[in-house]
Image (cartoon, rainbow, N blue to C red):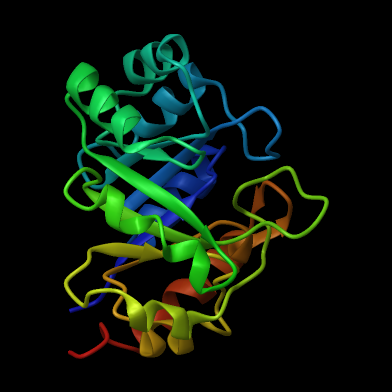
Amino acid sequence: MKPDIKICGLKTAEAVDRAVARGATHVGFIFFPKSPRNIAPELAGDLADRVRDRVKIVAVTVDANDEELDDIVHLLRPDMLQMHGHESPERLLHVKAVYGLPVMKAFSIRDAGDLSGVDAYIGVADRFLFDAKAPAGSELPGGNGVSFDWSLMASLDEGLDYMLSGGLNKDNVAEALAATHARGIDTSSGVESAPGVKDPEMIDAFFEAVAKVGRPGA
């Protein structure tokens, strides 16, 4: 089996259509004003409607409050919420109760200590996403085009359901899959010609690279 593949930070119909045509299982829309991939919920909803019956729609937020989530959920109608900030387990439980949606909790990783908080979310988060910690000076929690030491994932329970992110591109995705037990992969900057600008040919190349490898352990 191949891993789930999420193309994140989509902003145009061309990019959405290309990602889904090539085999994306998830498409992500980012709601974070500091990001070059930020999108208005209404536009994201229109783009999602193009592919809603074929993929999972993911709303990516960073410490969003209930008012912001109300707007996103109403206009996008996502299948899953991705929380990429400092949300506590209690916050996740609240969000799940209010919106009735599964939640994917993102962790930013640089060293083993950054995994110490994962246990508190087991049984609360429906899925995890492990991304590289932002480099100095960046205000973005993700989408920075940098990777982390994938060998750190060996300390996780093999049954933990997570997506791997952080600088994944056509040149390293096979290595990343071989090095981890990730059931899903997530890329954004890895298929961009400039921050926030998805490149159809880079999307093609990423999927072609994934097609050459199977799911780890398969």
